[in-house]
Length: 262
Image (tube, rainbow, N blue to C red; front, top):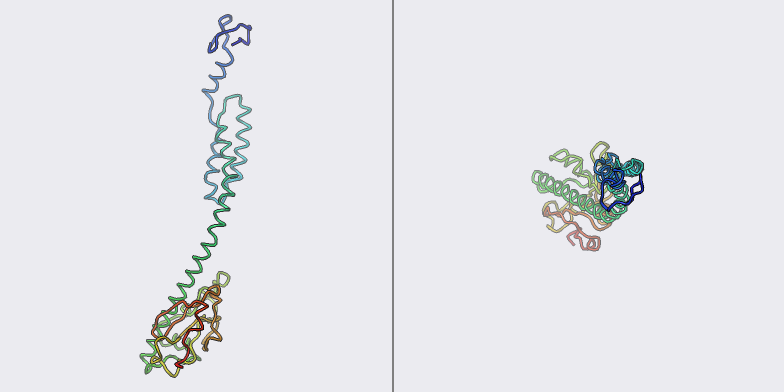
């Protein structure tokens, strides 16, 4: 190892020149490195990068900027700052994680949409179950006769403990019409009554259709001509039968429903 001051050759690992006692360059560099501080910018960059997935990558850009600035300051510090690894990681993590998160969301979104659809279907079925109980209560008080099909919604509200929200299938309105669903706007009903049930009342066959899904309206009655599967992506619809059980009937099985006694 050559002394930078006098040019004398010294043994490798020597700390002082044997000729002029000057501190050798490698020793000075080691001492300086031992006392170097970790760059706060590098640490901040890494922290922001780590939490970026939790902040929807809002902190990703600051992490990259701080990492770049940190690298520049470290290189200009003459060994007084360290933390290149932290800064590089702070720059690289958002770049690596962003495509991964995007891919993960692309995989998960269809599943999340499906879960929401199933939730809408379940709530819709619960509404029909509640209306079925109300129908039984009404029939028990009026000689086993169901409400008149032309005003069945109004009669259930007047004579039983139901409110307008029970008449609405969430899938019929979607997110854009949440105000309608929550009951802020006027009367809307996602269900219709089987028009052939009026004369038979509660004595109708247990597997006969009583209520079924239709386009939003009020006091609607009819048959398969107004039934809709649009509320559940045309996969089927919920149907309330005379025996009070609710079933999600698939589209391909709708033609098998019993609408009359014939």
